[in-house]
Image 1 (cartoon, helix red, strand yellow):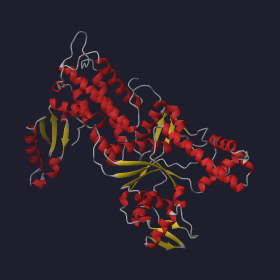
Image 2 (image 1 turned 30 degrees about the horizontal axis):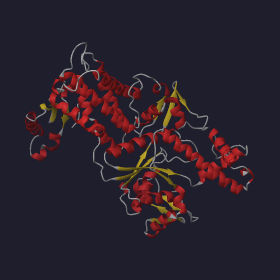
Image 3 (image 1 turned 180 degrees about the vertical axis):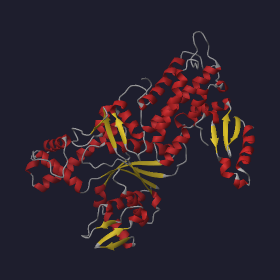
Length: 519
């Protein structure tokens, strides 16, 4: 079932007769004719017509459309939820930025999309654990510590180090908290800056994410996998089971069998674990915690992870489909038609804090979820700071505020004693609004199935686009005029406004975007 682009083709259309006609031993058009005759007699359907080789165009009876409004108001905040994924335990890992600097725009995109996806999956009954993989092990942390030490000593940034005001701020904080730290032996000094610098940086990351509306159930430390021996144990398990092969003095996993561009070294020729060792142990840890599905949301340069993570799953005897990897493309800021490339605080990148400072949390979250993660996006600062209908988030939020205004004005009238008659909602704009409202559960279900939160965003814009003309038309009065009393038509329209407000609020809630009462 789908809604035709052309309203003249009915409220809904289906090609079911073309799919099953031959299986029933009939010409699809003849089969469609039988279906049309039966549907035309069904309660709630005004007409069913055959088109082309076997399409069915269906028109709902006007009174039946009211059932959609009643269903929305009865379900309230639960409208759009479903038990489709009930019983499925999902680990959703996203952002997971290295604690070596503020969250950049790519991580900010995942903070928006990942949080929205978690909400959408949960709305369909899944048990979702939002997880941040805290990369506190490895060479990049050493480079971070070296940068802090250099800043504290007033030395230039190391060639492979990190620069920016935040490095100086953290270095100063460590020095003030530890008088005499600069006189410590080099190894001790480095370790102290490493430990406390990472703690300070990650505290800033967590605070920033919280203020952005993105919180996690689990913060998992990469270093714990090495400290506990989990990495070594996982590798030995694979080695003993014959899932690794030896070549050139190293041990490899056959990740090309799962779409990787090359097989990956797991144990280097010097006997030490390669970086993938931590990934393998981490996946095994997730499965040991009982997750049925592990979703990884990674940056544009991480395509190779798809094959290696699926290969790791298969090597442990798991179904590779227990791993899903979503790859997000680049984000660029644009102002006055030119790219914004530098953050003073971060030194070389634009950060989450920079974006929020420019356009606010709601616009930032909404703009980053609005497009498929498969495509790069430009965030036009001039557009997203506008206070008019050209700004997509303003357009949707304003629709919600307008419904609230109508309901506030209606409080002065006696609607409670006048039952709504939905059969009176015969205007095309009323019908279009009702049918759009009825699409919401399908949109959310599809967004969950396809892992595409942007479907909810585009739907909300469609809904706002159906609502604004309805409210703007003075002939479609919701509130009685002058000394007029409330009629069954007024009551029906008021219920339609209530339903619109509810669906707008539900959809914005899935995105982590506010639904303002007034604007």
